[in-house]
Image (cartoon, rainbow, N blue to C red; front, side):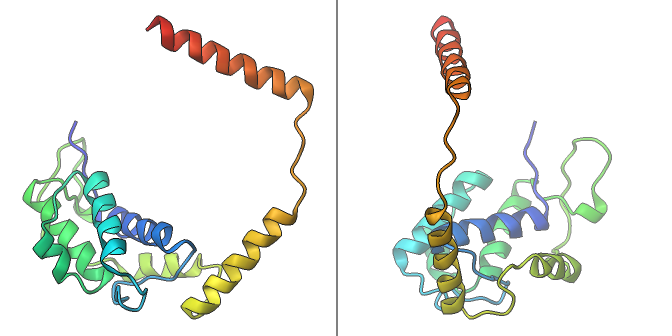
Length: 170
């Protein structure tokens, strides 16, 4: 079965990759520049490699060097997926598994608004977001770790042993 992707999935995936590389939740829109995120060439390599792996496509060094905004990255991924007929317009998606090639599609404003409404940091600057994220991490680390009961530990160990035995027999 061919993997197909919608613009919403592409937008969400590239945002997660950027946030993972950034190390915290950061509000990203299609107009956000990689310069605003203080991304250097190594950060860009990480983002491009992650997108190549997830979407199973190839981005050339020239294409990577030309990327200035998140929107340009999303557009590049969409164009490459269209070239292999793996981009599906969610509004025109056919019944069944058949992928279709469709006209250009931007991330709908409703989806962007929905993503923005889930933003726990509101309209904070990048520096404020980093500080809030760091404070949350410190608060989580300060909470005492829940001790597992002996029964929970034994059950976990038994599952690991069963999985190891099953793997060795295959």
